[in-house]
Image 1: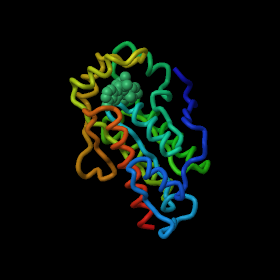
Image 2: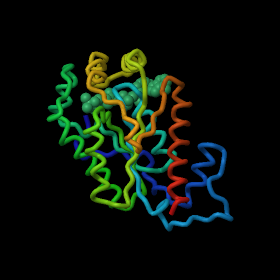
Image 3: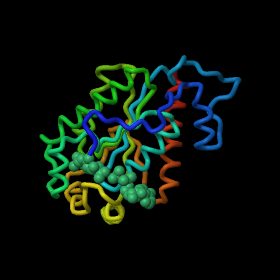
Image 4: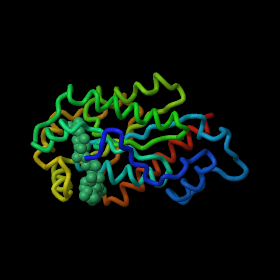
Length: 230
Ligand SMILES: Nc1ncnc2c1ncn2[C@@H]1O[C@H](COP(=O)(O)OP(=O)(O)O)[C@@H](O)[C@H]1O
Ligand SMILES: O=C(O)[C@H](O)[C@@H](O)[C@H](O)[C@H](O)COP(=O)(O)O
């Protein structure tokens, strides 16, 4: 278990600027986003906005696998939500006891604050993982935009059946969340509703490579349209 202030920076390199978007787009889709004839309109940051990309869903849906891919491709820091739990929360989950709302509030706030801290240090965006099972948990992260009006928050919800989640959690080695926790997570899950317009839903029943590619294309598209709208 890593300490509460541990943040995983996958690449340790500088985050992408607007000027980097064409090469990310090309890598994701084979189609350049901008050409020399359509130069970046915003300086430094794409569209003048910064971004939190929050990869969500129950245990085993693929949050870590997708978030690492996005962080690497976008050259953004990766904040692994599991690393921010208190030891008491981890002990509870390891014993097969689901967390309560009260156990989760400080954790969610810590994730929001860490994301904002990294963005305030000059990052264009961060990629964060957190199950964010209920709407009110997602709302805790959404509060970040209240503090920083240039910040856009996006959720990538990884959609999987219980059967698939069980298969994938069972395959995973050495994690405190066992397969016995999956059902309790689905019991409280509030799938994003259509009026949560900041959510991209991705079907993860496909291969990991396909899911990663789809997620990256969707992210690059959104950053591209945000940039074009400035
Ligand atoms: N689309 C996929 N196809 C096959 N295996 C996957 C896929 N996504 C994730 N996995 C595997 O399932 C397990 C759980 O994935 P992980 O990224 O740890 O999920 P989470 O972080 O949401 O708990 C890992 O062993 C991972 O390699
Ligand atoms: O990757 C996973 O196995 C899960 O995401 C897991 O780590 C856990 O779900 C959360 O960290 C916190 O718990 P809740 O999902 O119960 O809020």
